[in-house]
Length: 304
Image (cartoon, rainbow, N blue to C red):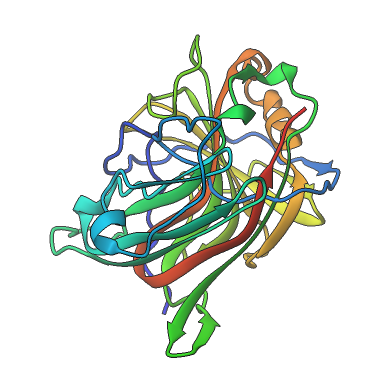
């Protein structure tokens, strides 16, 4: 069964129901992004920056790790539970562990259902558990030469001693990078920014981004994967949202590439993007309905 298709979330700090997407009609083009090597995983939406002395921490206790602002620190990364949409459903989510530096490994276990108040039938996003390294952000886009990243992840269920991959139609969720541009100074993820960019490595249960029901406006190739580009307006925040989605709908459980060409490709649509501040790069999973453990075995991100 394919679940109802929701729209994507607003910018951090402005969470709420999604607005109707709007998509431009620009002609489609394709660019090729050179592959790179490194390792990536999740980022954080509204977490404070960890100090350089932060150490790995582990928690499997839902009573201490399932609140909206639960955090774990590992190396340069803050791992954030980020249950920003929990009011649209019932259930729970726990950060399980975080270890390593860069790369980092971490996991989150979640189980969510929609509430009866969700009369539209849409599977609203309940959370975006993610990892965030503040050292990668806080520069104008034009200052970056590369942003190499790599990510190895799985969505699994465990029955006794056996763990198995979750079927692509068994849950409603996505696995994605979430990136924000704009502002006149660097602040922790949280405020509304004019430009949001997402790179989806996996979509479950028919989930699509803002503008995803309209025609693609372009495409890029990264790590031998073709990503189609969609665009729309988040009416809750006024932000323009650009989303790169795997063209054939497959799950990319292992990705290694350079994020920078995704952003420079967008300069054809946003002439001032090169001068904007890159406020944050987050990597994680948006959970809507179902049950799973999202496990990142290795994630790293760097910049030059």
